[in-house]
Length: 283
Image (tube, rainbow, N blue to C red; front, side):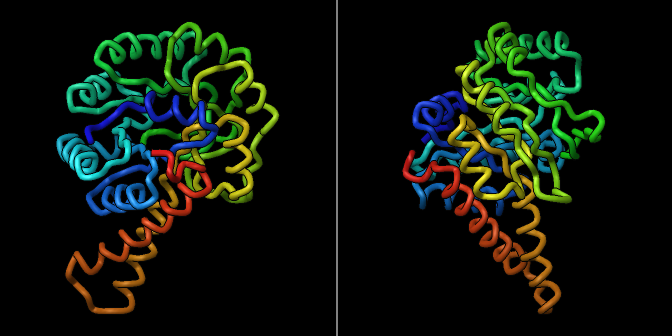
């Protein structure tokens, strides 16, 4: 298959009452793990690349990995810019085969965030890309995104309505208590706020910072309207732990024997997440 847009897979998820996993990629092994698992489970999947991943791997490699992944599977695959803050990077992604971009203006005042999001929509939609925006701010650190607890702001349901109507954005990332990075305690999601937003807004809703959120909270969030769930930190931890085990318990120096177990460990994380998101057999 060729790459599809986030709008295509998320609108279907919105109609079907499930969520699609957005898994961050940085290299070949991570991409292979995600795609092979999604194929085995017959699940649509979003390959998410952050600005940091693009800087690390090179946008040409990211594009080639995603297009190759889509070509060898029968499940819908998208290539999505995660947490885009630089308009020039968004233009670069449009030129390099991305099918979806996120513009993260969440640290800006409401009106400035709205204006920036509309600017991206006006450029991306004519090129056939879908657009995700963020309203409200999640605490934590992810690549270039850093928000302190004092800066974190939950999404206002009425502002969400205005934002969606005026920007024509395709999906909306909301702040309801999740965080980027590793949680220090058990996260408490504001399900009442999520329910209010879902009743007021028709487009798919996105949950960032989902690594480490308990299974029952994820399942409840999906039932209340979350259609895209981002997973990055848990993939990194699985990769790290598998590599550490190999290099500390053996004298292996073949990269294939080091990265292979890491790839297998990531597959298990992806398999578990797809299962609780409800997207198995939804391709």
